[in-house]
Length: 220
Image 1 (spheres, helix red, strand yellow):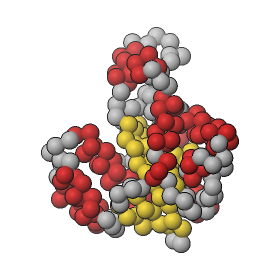
Image 2 (image 1 turned 90 degrees about the horizontal axis):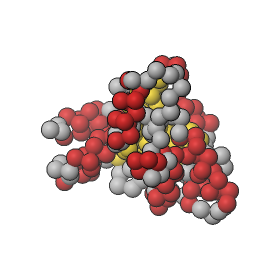
Image 3 (image 1 turned 180 degrees about the horizontal axis):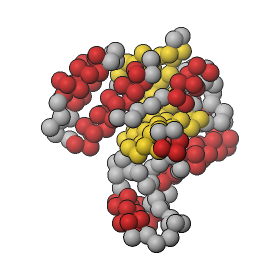
Image 4 (image 1 turned 60 degrees about the vertical axis):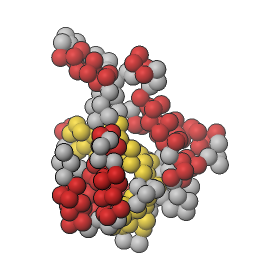
């Protein structure tokens, strides 16, 4: 059972605004677990930015209006649930006798590579990317083997290729993808948040915002 009052209290105490509108979305969707899970990850993302000393407003579309000093950034949030391929991979990895064992291949189970799924989401979210300001897509992943920091650069490369082929495509408004993973990577300095920047966005990121995105953390 989701404690809506506690969640909204934590958001408000963290300095996040627009919480009452968010509370209404939680109340209206309390019986739909997938929607509630997506909303909870939206709340975690809002707190992540707030703890990075950003101003954060929760809104309808895009999901988050983020400010850092005089700079403004919009963030659209997408949640990837755990996949059946994760279970298959975990079983194979437990019985592995080789150090080189492929994993994360979603084509047999879903007919599409994981990086294509991420790029497709980025394309479907084009209407949420605002003109005249930087935009990021924040992906919260509960799929440790399929939607991880290894495949996001390929997805970003596909986005860059679309922008090269179609200079007027709405993806030009996207500055990059922020991946929030459930898995903590010790080899990368105890991180589970990673920022992958697009090559030629319409509005370049201010250096202060880029530094914030590269340094933001969500370890709990």
